[in-house]
Image (cartoon, rainbow, N blue to C red; front, side):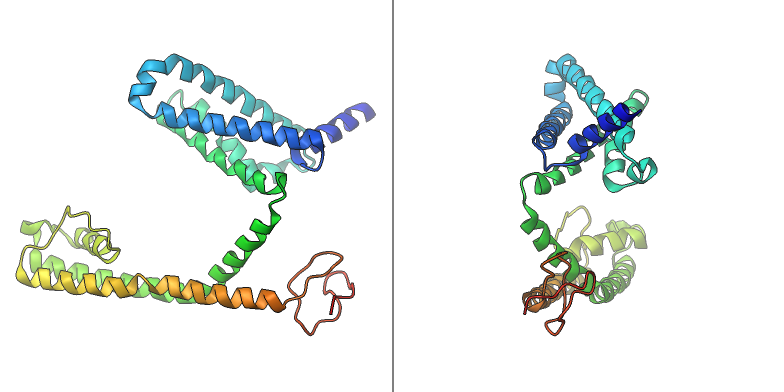
Length: 271
């Protein structure tokens, strides 16, 4: 039993840690395998390539499936809290990278879902010590959270405009001009206000064209609003981070510039 425990601990360090040569090598090989599998899935979706090299692609697909299945089983085998891992973010990613292929026997299109395993490439940040990029991303996340109330108000305003304009276009244009119902007219309003403009539905009457022109002009001002909100919050977040203190012992942050001791470990903060 003791030897089995040591083996599991050693295997756990290799699979889940990157601070050892073996662990780093494992993650790099895994990333190369994920990239290879992703390229395979992309190529398989091209009919010309699939028709010419279908047998080869299918063979490599099963090889990748076996590798990922063994890896998933080993992760469950060595992890202490198995249930927590299974329902964790990466645990679900690992599971969904395997299950679709098996279900793909009955539903062929599902096998393409294995490409979601590219999320595992987030391990690159820890493997190559790219922590500063994670720190920068945390600034953006905090800015988005701070922007949430303003963004929600903005989205509700857009929703009201879409409902009102969509209803008006249904009344003005009617089914004979492609505006067959209010949801269809709302779809046109979304496409127009987002400045995408597919052109599958377009107003034919003078009044409809006038309303459409007003909506387009309004869209140019509206589309810049969320960018301004997030940019403002990002600037505030970055400014606060500049004056915030980081605990030299446990790295907890942010602390106010007036704080003397860390709120988590009690260590003396740098002045």
